Length: 124
Figure 1 (cartoon, rainbow, N blue to C red):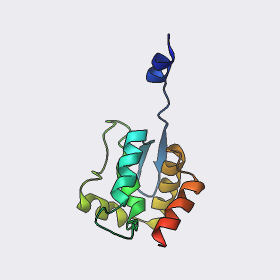
Figure 2: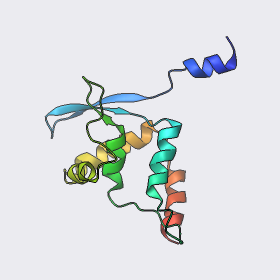
Figure 3: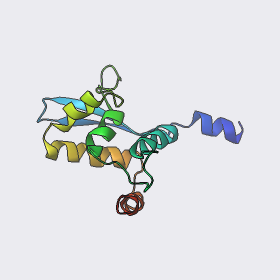
Figure 4: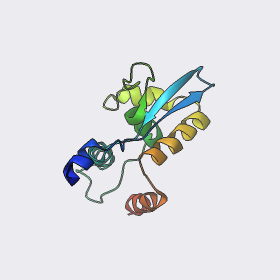
């Protein structure tokens, strides 16, 4: 088997079922693929902004909409492309959202160095 086959067959997408007692359920968090992460980060940029400011409003809910699945059906719970879904999830308890957000970032390899890079763009 060649290198491409090894890469293609790798089981490198991370996932973890998280108990959320506050919601009375469990959710499945699945890491973003490279393509999905690039798309997520692209949507944080507004190409019409000349100052290249990132749009981080409701970023916690946005990331969770992209990574939170029903553990039984393995379907996304919320649609990241629907502002009403992002807004609805964003209305939940901030402590619960932060806990899930941290785990989603960890699974997707979003490191503190990445945050520092984002912070620079938001302060321009």
